[in-house]
Length: 319
Image (cartoon, rainbow, N blue to C red; front, side, top):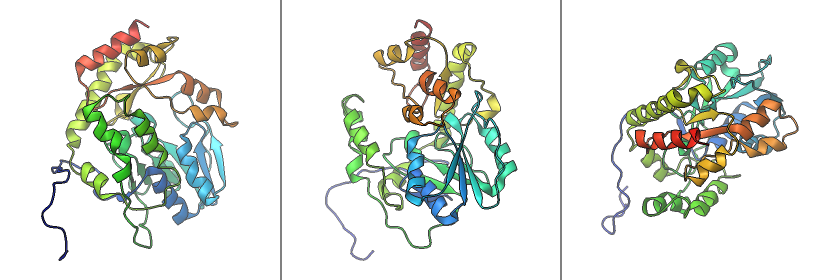
């Protein structure tokens, strides 16, 4: 650019990372908009999707008016009864918590291009050729927005880049203060993603994503995951097989200790609930209800080491 700015104050400087896993993806401003792009491009006659699902994935269905039908998952987080799909239909499956890698591959072999694989909770899992795969970086690293899409044609028109300027205060604030202090800013940032126009990923989010060491991130996440599993696996009702796990988002602990969620939060170990809105879906199953109320996503990400995992284990076992 002949007229680009020269001089003035410094902006945020980010280095070049290693092994960025999504260089070939379409970079959009959110995972739900990646899903929206699929629906608008394909216009399936019907979409099958799990009743155990984040409400954000319902937004693109409302915006497009695509007919849909819910299916149920079982206690292994797998489809309880596999639907038959016509050539014009699509089926969405979530790689829950990043612990259903092999099962996702088997679904891709069965459904081919009819499958839309939601890897929002499996950012480090490889995309499956011939299948549309959606990723959500903000669940894994310090960005406020962004979505990645493999296996789908790009938009026919050039997309305007989005901006992250007004949604990163909680990220910067947590460097100087506690997560609790900036939690309202985090909630505001999350809410700003609703009904956002389909745009390209912001330059800020793209720069952050390309600055990270993904080999190290994957190593730490998996090390922490298996450390927790070695101590808590005997109490976990969720079956976890090593080949299914790839760079997981959390350690999904499905135990039977009353009051454990409150005890963890009281000890400043923050665990989310996936997903409270499921309980208001009239098509929910008993498994959906139990997962929503009982499953605890224990933190295992790259910010933490063995001492932090020991603190989680101690808190769980004395509940």
